[in-house]
Image (cartoon, rainbow, N blue to C red; front, side):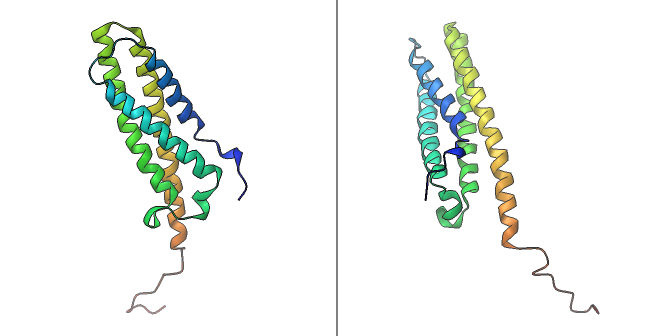
Length: 152
Protein backbone atom coordinates (compact mmCIF):
# COMPACT_ATOMS: atom_id res chain seq x y z
CA UNK A 1 0.00 0.00 0.00
CA UNK A 2 1.31 3.47 -0.79
CA UNK A 3 1.71 6.06 1.91
CA UNK A 4 -1.23 8.41 2.17
CA UNK A 5 0.19 11.66 3.51
CA UNK A 6 -3.15 13.49 3.31
CA UNK A 7 -4.41 11.70 6.43
CA UNK A 8 -2.30 13.65 8.92
CA UNK A 9 -5.27 14.58 11.09
CA UNK A 10 -3.45 13.41 14.23
CA UNK A 11 -0.74 16.02 13.76
CA UNK A 12 -2.30 18.71 16.04
CA UNK A 13 -2.37 16.24 18.94
CA UNK A 14 1.26 15.34 18.39
CA UNK A 15 2.29 18.99 18.05
CA UNK A 16 0.59 20.01 21.29
CA UNK A 17 2.22 17.06 23.08
CA UNK A 18 5.65 17.98 21.77
CA UNK A 19 5.14 21.66 22.65
CA UNK A 20 4.10 20.61 26.14
CA UNK A 21 7.15 18.36 26.43
CA UNK A 22 9.52 21.15 25.41
CA UNK A 23 7.91 23.81 27.58
CA UNK A 24 7.63 21.57 30.65
CA UNK A 25 11.31 20.72 30.36
CA UNK A 26 12.24 24.40 30.73
CA UNK A 27 10.52 24.81 34.12
CA UNK A 28 13.09 24.63 36.90
CA UNK A 29 10.95 23.84 39.96
CA UNK A 30 9.31 20.38 40.02
CA UNK A 31 6.50 20.16 42.57
CA UNK A 32 4.87 16.82 43.46
CA UNK A 33 2.54 15.49 40.82
CA UNK A 34 4.69 16.41 37.84
CA UNK A 35 5.24 12.72 37.09
CA UNK A 36 1.55 12.47 36.11
CA UNK A 37 2.05 15.23 33.54
CA UNK A 38 5.22 13.56 32.20
CA UNK A 39 3.37 10.21 32.00
CA UNK A 40 0.50 11.87 30.13
CA UNK A 41 2.84 13.49 27.64
CA UNK A 42 4.85 10.31 27.06
CA UNK A 43 1.81 8.09 26.55
CA UNK A 44 0.17 10.67 24.31
CA UNK A 45 3.24 10.95 22.09
CA UNK A 46 3.56 7.17 21.76
CA UNK A 47 -0.17 6.77 21.01
CA UNK A 48 -0.10 9.62 18.47
CA UNK A 49 2.94 8.21 16.66
CA UNK A 50 1.34 4.75 16.49
CA UNK A 51 -1.91 6.28 15.23
CA UNK A 52 -0.10 8.29 12.56
CA UNK A 53 1.66 5.11 11.41
CA UNK A 54 -1.68 3.28 11.19
CA UNK A 55 -3.27 6.16 9.29
CA UNK A 56 -0.35 6.54 6.89
CA UNK A 57 -0.45 2.89 5.90
CA UNK A 58 -4.29 2.88 5.88
CA UNK A 59 -4.53 -0.12 8.18
CA UNK A 60 -7.65 1.37 9.72
CA UNK A 61 -9.64 0.42 6.61
CA UNK A 62 -7.95 -2.80 5.58
CA UNK A 63 -7.42 -4.66 8.85
CA UNK A 64 -9.80 -5.17 11.73
CA UNK A 65 -7.90 -4.21 14.82
CA UNK A 66 -8.05 -5.97 18.19
CA UNK A 67 -10.69 -8.69 18.58
CA UNK A 68 -12.89 -7.43 15.74
CA UNK A 69 -13.11 -3.93 17.19
CA UNK A 70 -12.99 -1.30 14.48
CA UNK A 71 -10.26 1.30 14.48
CA UNK A 72 -12.68 4.02 15.57
CA UNK A 73 -13.46 2.11 18.78
CA UNK A 74 -9.79 1.84 19.67
CA UNK A 75 -9.34 5.52 18.89
CA UNK A 76 -12.28 6.31 21.20
CA UNK A 77 -10.66 4.43 24.08
CA UNK A 78 -7.35 6.22 23.51
CA UNK A 79 -9.08 9.60 23.33
CA UNK A 80 -11.02 8.96 26.54
CA UNK A 81 -7.84 8.01 28.40
CA UNK A 82 -5.93 11.00 27.02
CA UNK A 83 -8.83 13.31 27.86
CA UNK A 84 -8.91 12.10 31.47
CA UNK A 85 -5.16 12.40 31.92
CA UNK A 86 -4.98 15.83 30.29
CA UNK A 87 -7.75 17.16 32.55
CA UNK A 88 -5.86 15.80 35.58
CA UNK A 89 -2.66 17.38 34.24
CA UNK A 90 -4.45 20.70 33.83
CA UNK A 91 -5.58 20.60 37.46
CA UNK A 92 -2.07 19.70 38.66
CA UNK A 93 -0.54 22.51 36.60
CA UNK A 94 -2.99 25.09 37.96
CA UNK A 95 -2.36 24.00 41.54
CA UNK A 96 1.41 24.03 40.93
CA UNK A 97 1.16 27.58 39.59
CA UNK A 98 -0.67 28.67 42.73
CA UNK A 99 2.03 27.15 44.95
CA UNK A 100 5.11 28.34 43.05
CA UNK A 101 3.89 31.59 41.44
CA UNK A 102 5.62 30.47 38.23
CA UNK A 103 3.69 31.56 35.14
CA UNK A 104 5.14 28.60 33.23
CA UNK A 105 2.70 26.25 34.93
CA UNK A 106 -0.20 28.37 33.71
CA UNK A 107 1.07 28.04 30.14
CA UNK A 108 1.38 24.27 30.67
CA UNK A 109 -2.19 24.22 32.03
CA UNK A 110 -3.47 26.09 28.95
CA UNK A 111 -1.67 23.68 26.61
CA UNK A 112 -3.04 20.70 28.59
CA UNK A 113 -6.53 22.14 28.32
CA UNK A 114 -6.06 22.69 24.58
CA UNK A 115 -4.92 19.07 24.21
CA UNK A 116 -7.94 17.90 26.22
CA UNK A 117 -10.25 19.83 23.89
CA UNK A 118 -8.54 18.33 20.84
CA UNK A 119 -8.98 14.83 22.27
CA UNK A 120 -12.62 15.60 23.10
CA UNK A 121 -13.32 16.63 19.50
CA UNK A 122 -11.44 13.54 18.31
CA UNK A 123 -13.63 11.41 20.60
CA UNK A 124 -16.82 12.90 19.17
CA UNK A 125 -15.65 12.35 15.59
CA UNK A 126 -14.65 8.74 16.24
CA UNK A 127 -17.86 7.92 18.10
CA UNK A 128 -19.76 9.13 15.03
CA UNK A 129 -17.48 7.08 12.76
CA UNK A 130 -17.96 4.02 14.95
CA UNK A 131 -21.75 4.40 14.96
CA UNK A 132 -21.88 4.97 11.20
CA UNK A 133 -19.70 1.93 10.57
CA UNK A 134 -21.79 -0.35 12.78
CA UNK A 135 -24.98 0.30 10.81
CA UNK A 136 -23.48 -1.41 7.79
CA UNK A 137 -23.34 -4.69 9.67
CA UNK A 138 -27.16 -4.86 9.81
CA UNK A 139 -28.60 -3.09 6.78
CA UNK A 140 -32.19 -1.92 6.96
CA UNK A 141 -34.74 -4.30 5.49
CA UNK A 142 -32.63 -7.47 5.61
CA UNK A 143 -33.90 -8.84 8.91
CA UNK A 144 -37.36 -7.42 8.88
CA UNK A 145 -39.90 -10.18 9.34
CA UNK A 146 -43.58 -9.82 9.85
CA UNK A 147 -45.19 -10.99 13.05
CA UNK A 148 -46.39 -14.56 13.12
CA UNK A 149 -50.00 -13.58 13.61
CA UNK A 150 -50.14 -10.80 11.07
CA UNK A 151 -51.52 -11.14 7.59
CA UNK A 152 -48.97 -9.40 5.43
